[in-house]
Image (cartoon, rainbow, N blue to C red; front, side, top):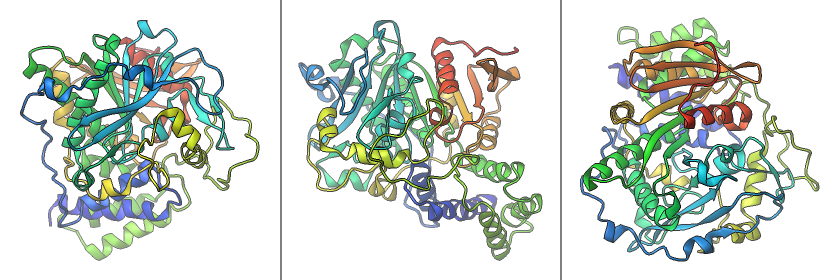
Length: 493
């Protein structure tokens, strides 16, 4: 039995354990469930290298009239929102008129919007909401209070550095929808990227002032696939159109799924190096689960179970962070801390986004679904049709086309840990330009950074879990600000 077979078995055992442990569905749980399905012996998921559709975008067919829609999308104020000085918009962009497929977006301009670039944010899963996570728990301008009714300012929101566009993708995620049921039975990486391109082309018609603005794509977790795939599709269609349809300048991904094999090995290395499992347990896992010579299914099962038992009762997304022990809503909002993320925030966001007045204000749920809105969509990841084992070729393609690539990693994440990301970058066989150094924020180490010839930068964020802007908002804002400006954060270089 070859090492790839070992990997499929091991990844399935490892991730299914944490899915079973989880009390609430999060994007990392969905990632675990998805990989469990992906690595089944007779999985229907296509794992070949990603490639955009070969045909050119027929602009006269995919770009629909957008007159007056921007004004209709303007959000005067969200329920329970504190006063702000920036504009926000929310609404739907049709990406396939005949199928009735429309993607929902939420857009927060910067106060000085004309001088700053446009940044798209995508969450992962696959099948999880960029509004629930990115906008409401990570880098958006507001966070939901413990009463599930009111909001407080996130003073480290990324619209201090860019005009930030949150997209619910693909159709079936969050508030995005389709009137064609077969769309929900055949989603995948390729259809997601193609719909995202069509979304952007139409959105830029609706907001023409951003057409020539520098454009960046960001995201985390399974968006480690979405972001470079969308960059690939943009480069592809720009080339075929012989013009700049979308002015792509750079991509940045955090705690990202990059390369299945190195991602998995790095997981076990992280647990061992952080004393979550013993060195003996780690050596046994490598011996009985990864070695052609010593492989034993029964022994592999046993040593993996031992490792799983030793990592119970942890928040795997931030191994040093407390669990949510009481997620009940409160009558009055608890006093929030600007730098301390509330572990029960998922519950507050779920309550807030299921309020009819909130949905009306966001111009969301226009089809009036009869079931509760959820942060992650079960049908999508169970029916996913395409997920390559690696996106390394696409990262190299972006670099070759002059698109800057940054990869960042919260160093307390156990879902896609820093050891996995380091191994995946090593698999790219790049040459180091500026070696490993600390970068500084507020007079102390914000993390560590290394740059490579060709334009790739890798940075860690100290003390951050899987959702980096949730746990270390100030450091995350510093990092994205330097990425957008094309500079490295201050340090010793």
